[in-house]
Amino acid sequence: MNLLRYASLFLFCISLSACGVDTTGLSAASSRPIKGPETALVTVTEYGDFQCPACGSAYTIINQPLLAKYESKIRFEFKHFPLRTIHVNAYEAAQAAECAADQGKFWEFVDMDYQQQKDLSSTMLRTWGAALGLNADLFDRCIRSEIKGATIMADEAEGEKLGVSGTPAYFVNGVRVEVSSLEALVTAVDEALAKAKSTPL
Image 1 (cartoon, rainbow, N blue to C red):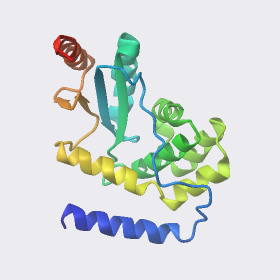
Image 2 (cartoon, one colour):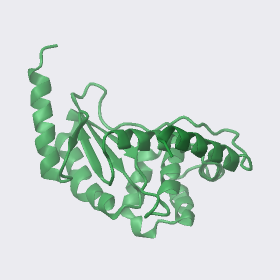
Image 3 (cartoon, one colour):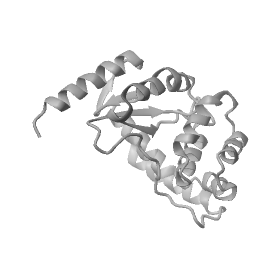
């Protein structure tokens, strides 16, 4: 089945699943923010899966040290790549992250998920939402409606076009960093910063 046909079928299935859920006050658009200033010369993009153990480890040993090192020098964005066939809760967790973003708590949700990843379940998503002070009704209806499906699907399709097949996968200014390690990302960011600074406006 080609990607376009799959996407059409997926969105049709989402529309059917949403029929039984009140979508008042919900939006299909993504509110997911990017960390870092608009003026940053370098953007680091991670394609991740909220149930992926390697992503959970990378959150601690790569993402946090990288952001601490470069502070306001880079932008950091997260894109969804749930590995549905092996991680049964990953897609719903991606939905929950987008729903949390609508209430201004995207990165807080990311932190909570990776810090408590071993407890991830459909019920725990709602528990985390409550702990973050989210409107429980909006959050629950948003997840159950799967209204964020098109956003997640778009991230997946973009990742596949870039050759992503596993997570985490990192890109620096659109260029794949083949080894997912802090050292490899630091090298790539330093090179991208040097290149950006030496390029005439």
